[in-house]
Amino acid sequence: MAIKGNNLPRVKKQNETLIKEIIYKYGPISRSKIAEMLSLTPPTITTNVTALIEQGLVYEFSTDISDSEEKGEEKVLGRRPVKINFVPDSRYAIGVETNPYNTAICMLDLRGNEICSARYEPAKDNYEKELDLLAQRIQTLIDKSKVDRECILGVGFGLPGFVEPEAGVLRESFNTGWNNKNIVRDLSRRLDLPVLIGNNARIRAIGEEMLSRTLRPESFAYYLISYGIACPMFVKSRMIIGENSTAGEAGHMVVDIHGPKCETCGHYGCLEEVASERAILKKCKTGMRAGEATMLMELCPDINSLTMKEVLTAEECLDEYVMSVMNEAILYLGVALANIINLISPPLVIIDGYIMKLKRNRRLLLEETRKHIFALSEEEIEFEFVDFDPLTGARGGAALAIKEFFIKG
Ligand SMILES: [Zn+2]
Image (cartoon, rainbow, N blue to C red; front, side, top):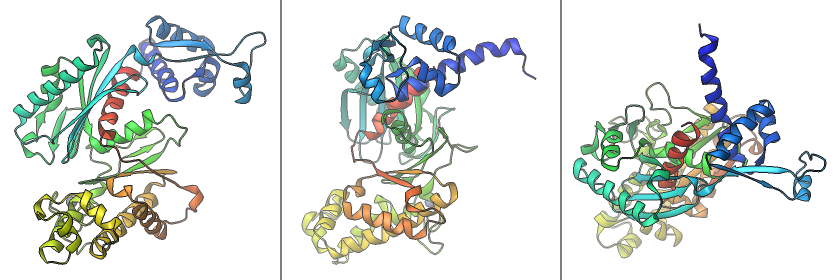
């Protein structure tokens, strides 16, 4: 049984984290609103906020009375309502994402504003050499930002595949040379900064949770359709990670028991093998070799260099071969998404993927998904598409660093 005296520091720490989280998500916000949202006493809020102000992390300012009245907030007679918020340039975080297409690095201030960013070719297999290179590139970014190193919270690093964040190890990914390496330890040593790693789809979901600054449901699914596919989920602000950190691996849901063998896991009929960008490119290349995908041949005479860019261009030009490949992929993506919705019933699904740049694909995905949703009406579930940005994953990495090193820290 817990001893009361020992719990006190823990309760204080928990309150501090909760207050920071509320200011982060809803700031600028008044003290009374924080007290109301967290059911904490005003003195508890004041003690914590005063400490944050003294550390230079939070500032307070008087708001326009009419503005507050408009928002229906309480008004203390004779006083202008005071709100608080985090000081954007009091802390900074670095985010990194490496995926089969590129490696993106960015630095955000505490409020999520981008200070600088850079993109490079994807990381290769040679672990030690690649990590040296990454550390150099992060250092270059820090030098360029001219930010005081002491104000940098740390680095959040997103990688595709099976990541064990607690152990700091990447168990399995597209770069087999990185498998089972302790990336947290090795990168942290090179940079002399704290480092965290996570699966890149989860990190993107954390980026949405932390940086979107819009009022959203506390439960949502984040459907990432890329070279691989994943669907991390937040339920009441907590990410479902599973006992072994493998929850959300939607790419390995079986959608066709008689389907092809999955290149990643070796089982048959995985979603990833019929609907990921990897699968789409594979089918398009097969069509090119067979002389069926003539438009793709015109757009990219070297079959091996085909990218999703040419595929989407051909789709935009209503090329029949490419449209049929995309229709089939999206049919499976819709079926899988409906299965996810039927299982966990999220009020919101955020969809992130290069192929969703095209309105046609968005419409097809929603049509296909809605065909298979059970019991929910259209109004009960919201779909939101993330505008494609090669820095989304890196921004998520920085959000992870802010969440773990600053909010919880
Ligand atoms: Zn699989």
